[in-house]
Image (tube, rainbow, N blue to C red; front, top):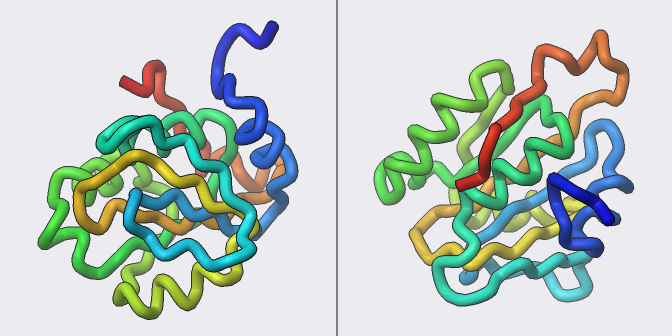
Length: 146
């Protein structure tokens, strides 16, 4: 029995397949996931799990070198925007319009759908190298996802 970390077998299995420079999208309940995409839906009810809970759990399992968000996040979801600014300090980041973000998400190897209902609660993560010397600076760990 796995004793900590992500217990969702499907999600854990998909995360172990992620390689350097692969893209993962963590999205809210309203995101237009492209038909035929690889999706792990962890939503339970509206609002659960939240975007930060899922992001923290994922970042405890993988290392990312950069991320992309909606350009409207700062205006419509300042709390989550600040959370990203406070915690992903070594990662390069970009902002895209919603149409540009949706178009670029077509490249994603994995979509993780949360129960999040707050606006602009979407992030595109680009995975870092598995080589410790190259990726150590990007490591982020959360003692709890709550």
